[in-house]
Length: 629
Image (cartoon, rainbow, N blue to C red; front, side, top):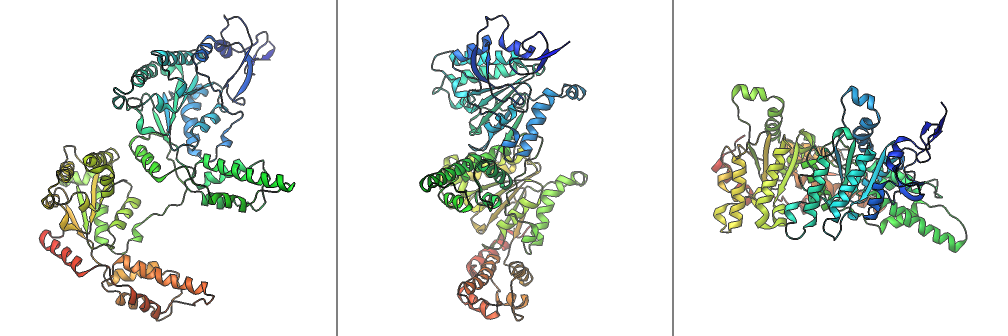
């Protein structure tokens, strides 16, 4: 029997038919034939095609209701047009394409497609673009929905649109329904009581429709948002949105790829350094980079119009425009997304950010061997050898308090613990409380403990705990008393703090509420003292590594000159010494090496930052409470 091609999607079909069964099902064979042009996403190699076809009844209803399917998606977008995000592409392929296209494997291993996926992250980082690219990889329908089109001022109109949409999806399954900016219809219901009557009703119907989709129907709901914290918890639970994927700003390798994509097809100078551009655009979203390339191309085109000569776009053009361009992704946004990621992200593959970040390891912490041992025992032993603790009836440590003069390594030790120990690191600081005001500070403490328990094994770090749980006897403020009481309740724990260790630091131990200091709350109280002679040698060796030194400059001589100096003081001394070499270079009189006189000159200007009064307070605290190590 001869074969032909479907007039709609181009698939091979039996001769004598004009379209395949799938397209015939969508277009509705019973309707009178009339030609109408509209945009719809069809599948592999034809991600968006203008076709002259007979409309399905459901599509006509949706368009009359104001929902246009895939009305603006760009043509021929593939995975190669999405720079970076290889782990996310693989996650999407494994979750969507494999179960729906490889029915043989799905049947063999009883694989079922996920019911829903949520992609969240800063605006302009590629959430919608990933779905555009997905449409070129599949052989089934992808229905793009601009969620704001669903909302209507007329009572019952929004609900009708949602029902018609899911009815269409069932008729053309297998398919994907992509809701862009799903937070428009998925807001938390308890926060909209009274002010918004549409969203709670609409969300209830949306959840009902999602629950009504059987796994055998092969309908996948995908949503994207840049406000994930606004979503109702009932929407983001497993069984509805099974996978929650964070789409962060592109890392350094992804930014390099994005520059190549957006500068392709333009006259580019041969010395274009894409790697340098990627290094200079940390925190830039893909949309920021696209806008930067467009601005540069527009500027160069304008110059070419004036001169009448076409010239290439060079590095100076990009660097000049980059100086007056700001990223749209703020640090506060990233902090918000990281918290949501820690609480909710569910994915099979671990996303790796290739940006080079400064990390602190145990080797960076000179000395403090006893404190390192305590931290390793408190976190690693319950995780790796719980049977030993159970065998001998050993209770897990609840808290560790590091106290001592400022600049001696308490915070650095906490950072090293975060980097070295295979545990989540949740930080609560006094600034978090002040930012939320004292009336909301109790919630900040509560959320910090909950987040640590949900991500165990975890370290909950309370930096400068004297500003969080100061002595109740020193203040009559009832809000401060509430915060201290909340910390005490959480450490005693109505819920067991299993595999969670509270790590607190302070340089004012006498200001901490005494009730926190008993065993059972802070089991270990560790004094981080000024560095001794051997530790000072290690600090100098670390910070002067590779520097040209005169033979008279030895670690012993430097250590003897800096008795009473903290680790932070010694770091500053080394930095000033290296800066003197830079100044000499700028004067065109480079110094061959650092001499002992250079260090003596610096020490004449820099006195120890730790006073006798601070040391005495720490000693008094030691005498009163003792060091529990």
